[in-house]
Length: 411
Image (cartoon, rainbow, N blue to C red; front, side, top):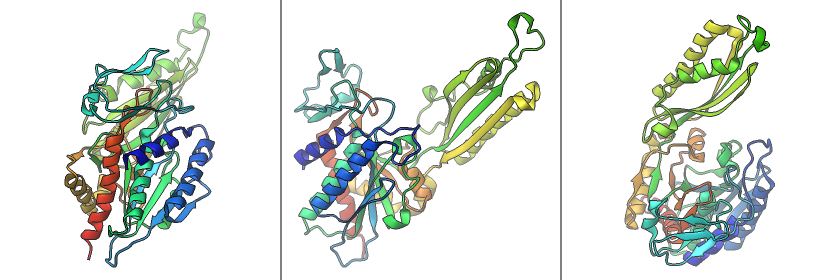
């Protein structure tokens, strides 16, 4: 299984599937189509049934049931795209056999080193087979590792028909990294009662809580007058924007928060005297606190509008996704089964909130409760990204074990 996973992952990693937030197509980039079509052919080759790819690049397939029991249809999902923040072109994965615990030279010419001094988590991987970048691109373990693990688990079950299981659906989706993953996902066509995204980080991660999320865009209008004659006339939009930012709690920002703590995050600040635009994201696990954060921004904007004029400030707040825990708690047994699957394999489950969102955040509110399990990668979205092939094997084994447990617990 390990060699199969390595070969699959490296093959997928070499396809540039970065998503593009500026594109209005779905998928947002042509490279995602290339990998989607590759996956369709591979799903057919390993013996999956009902293999489809729709006009928006969503790949789906079925592993038919081989039991007479009434087993719920479950699904497994991973996303095709990689993050737009760092290049995914010309990915050249490097294989490190039996990692010795020391520095890994990613790129000798450029002096790029993956070091346990900078990344202490490397100590957990001594003796593992690691896959790294060459220091010039991201790796794409987020989430091509998830794709490889799902594909390998399905292939394993097809080769071992003695393992009884219900109907399993798999899906590979575009544009997760730019927040659009589930936007055109056909939940009814997928036909699963429950699903799991295989999109987490290190070994044992199990997540069913995500942020409530919104974005806020604020435009400040000023009045530009020659500074030599500006007294009593000029209104500097930059200064109004700064005043807005200063009224937000300074410690409620990403760099000061952790665990279940929410925040306001200023993503961009662009402007001049005449016009300034601020772009924020708002995050909180608690729905009441989330609503209070949005209300606070509205109150600050209203106060400044009263001070400078109602035509000077425009605030637009849009919700992005909600804490999936609200939809998963009523079917908590799907988390318990994943927990049991890991424990059965000697993996310590690490249940923690996602300080972000996954496709499962939106899918859970679309009628498909979808917690998240680990894929095994570290340092996502940059040149220092790496993954343990040994832990990829464990992720694939967890998928198989979850499928087995659903069958065993059914009548």
